Image 1 (cartoon, one colour):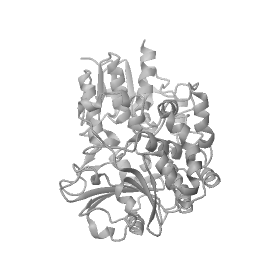
Image 2: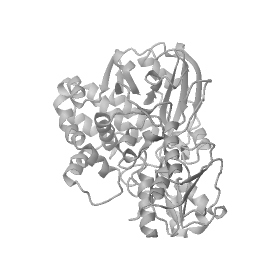
Image 3: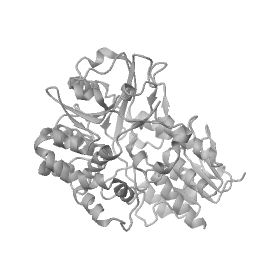
Image 4: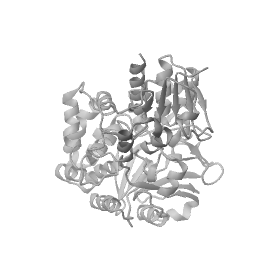
Length: 471
């Protein structure tokens, strides 16, 4: 059948847009360049046979918080979530570790002198978490819950270093907040770095930090199965180089970066808009390494063995220094490392008795540097003897990440810088961020609000804009 809408790119936002349009009764076709759908949700045997690794995204709290994804019957399409005993551990020197637990009360109590401050900061956000995520996972709008949004927004606008040092006193609490804020890949001295920390902590205390059983691909496959059940088509192994090669449709939704949109549709867009897209700013990249392991990682702090995700960076000062180096275009010799060990809680990811793990660190945009020695030095810092359990490695520099997925421009996994200027002005400063000057071309990637993360809301909002235009 001739499609009403065509979606280019089967990442989480492209699939979400396609599902929303299909739910509204439109005939939808999705084109994906890779053999498998998912974009950043793909999984593969990157090291040794029997070891499943997530190509990019691995831990998906936003999928459970997303107003759209949480309403979909994905369990009916094979998706099962795995919740580790602890969402996060943050080891410190001397065999210590701060932990982010599902229970806000237990986490606060573990922070001693900072118990009251932790509760005061996060209690309102966690108690009303559904309403909060409805607000923050939306483009610029008139808030439905202005008081709640103010409780979040006032501290969120502060630099994370300022918030942590003024509100918290212990090394553990400051490191815990700083590590979560560092996910935004902004220097901790810049606004709104606190926003990322507040969101991730609130997610841990409300919905946890789960992963799909068997790997991230399971989430992509469930979305694809749901789309097909609604009558949608998915064409894999089909790279679209220009919109001119596609069939006629009433709307083209592009789950791509602004740079890729210029390649796909440049001739159909007016010069002023093309220039605005060309000025879009991309952030630092990441260096990622996947491991096949003979045994669990030998963490010095016992709590780390119960965590699905670990932040390896030490104190708030150490983390801040690493992020400043990246912003200056330098490689940090003691990088802030994010590590996942999902196979401890999901036996579908590795052969019996063995394990898989992944780690990544922030690097300058497009960096070709192999950070393996620096990453492993940070792991060994908190898990002496780690190298002795490594069976195999697979690594990708920031430059190589882009070659595997053109949307990861310069290795930027966030779809562009998310600072105050570009948080809502994505990809350009416009009241209708998903629309382009061409009436049939729309953007639905993480380069639109609300930005990075596996939540599908960029795609859902774009779909609603398309449905409004076609009505």
